[in-house]
Image 1 (cartoon, chains in turn cyan, brown):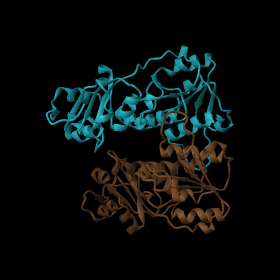
Image 2 (cartoon, each protein chain N blue to C red):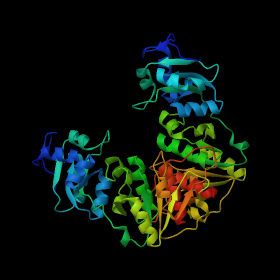
Image 3 (cartoon, helix red, strand yellow):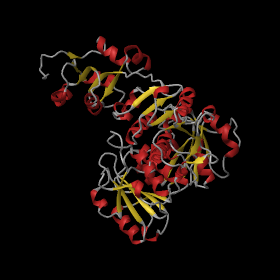
Image 4 (cartoon, rainbow over the protein chains, first blue to last red):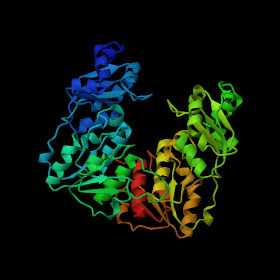
Length: 261
Length: 261
């Protein structure tokens, strides 16, 4: 596809496609269409490389011209006005290129999972934290991330932005950790909880493993005490200074790398 | 001091004190007065516990009543309208309590530093990243953080918020890393650079140490190659997955804890 001036350009906020894309900013809208939006060329490119199902590509005239040689065949492309780009993005100055892609299936039966390192999120609420943790899990070679009850939706725009495309490299799934933890221990995984409690086990005393799950708890409350009873072991990251806690995204990074190395 | 209705309340944005406090949102304003603002009771309390020099306390009526028993003696207290609280804060819904405190001296001669773990920041630009790194350095038991050229000002409101009071627990200083690195190696510190380069040394192969410096590089560009030539060793954090990089705050957390444990 090559840009030409005869192409139809979407200029109006009232355009029905624009209205439909805007709805993807909410979980309800994403559930209804079973799609979500990627914002920016880096993410769109990751989707193309991952052979993700692209339903539509939307680009301002400049972005269209810049990237058209890399557009995949058979995907409808829409030229959008700068104002529409601003409406689709939650950034103040969006790059001006978007893709609508399929939501992957969020259901997975833990019974059939027998290996890999898994990150379990217990009620993590900040989309930026969640996105960073998915990105770090990818870098640390984890197999997947399970979004437990009370966790933010993985496909919230801010979370997707912080993931930087890592959702195409590992599995994201939604699940009740009260079920997942016992299923995992039954399948011979070691399941590690994390606590801000020096009576838990110092994470630096644990031997690296291949098959395990690591639970990170809510930003303010920590991990649900009911979950702590189900784990194989509860770990803490030693705080040597006077800090009261670590940012949960940083703590997850330290814990994931320490348990793998 | 006890709240009473006769107290003078600052209601106007045009009040000269309000104008002076508002200037503390910029580096220039902070340099001129040699003070900065703490936003929220948690930070104000940290300053009180650290015996920091408080120049003024500002609180809405509600916050005044809630915390007055803990106000230190001899510090001028101002009752401010909710609108003034919003003006002083960069949060949408500020808590409504602030303190103006002294900027600590930002100069330190590296010649006279002989021990501890130090974090060197090379042109780190995001205030949230910087604040998180200071908080993690505190938790990991670091002695100080050196803000190299091109790094954001440590007392930017967003950075201060992310530090969560850790600036009272370790030393923050500004310095030219081209000078600091050779001074540190001369004083028998091991100075570790970090690179996104698998030909550098795997950080998990390094023995934990007591006296060292760790350099974290700019979010986009990484560490300045000129600095890499001055270090004792350059390290990388292995990326096992398909992720291209880690968030710099997460990478700093993994590196700091790995080198200490």
